[in-house]
Image (cartoon, rainbow, N blue to C red; front, side, top):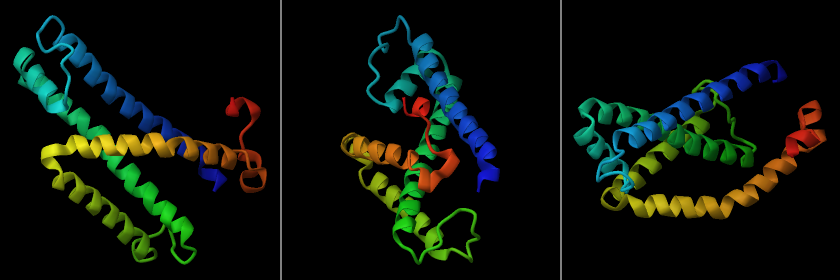
Length: 174
C-alpha cells in the first residue's frame, strides 16, 4: 500500500548503503593492504585475495573481509530466491505470495522460497571444486536476460493504469 512507500524507500536506501559499505571496505582493504606487494593486481578469487591480505596485513583483516563478503552473498542468495518465488506467485493466480502473509496463510509461497534456497545451495555445493563454471554461467545468463527485463520494468514503471500517481515521470525515465 502507498502508506508504506516511504518506509520501503528507506529500507531500500539502507540496504543499498550497507551493500556499498561492504564493497568499499573490500576494495579499500585490497588496494591499501596489497599495494606494493606481489599480490597486487592478482585478484583471481576471494580465497586467494583474502589469504594474501592475511599474509601481508594480518589475520584480522582477512577475517573482517570474509565477514563483509557474507553481506553480499546473503543479499544475492535471498534476492534471487525471493524474486523467483514472487515471479512464480504472480504467474499462479491461486498462490498467495507475499512476505506479509504468515507461513500458515501462504504455505506454498514459503515452501517455494525454501525450495529455491535449497536448490541454490545444492548447485553451489555440487560445483564446489569448479564454482567458476556456475558464476560465469549466471553472469552470462544475466547479460542475456537483463536487457529484456529492464525494458519490461521500464514499461511497467510507465503504466499509469497500474501505478497511477506512482508511475515514472520523464525525469525518472531519463
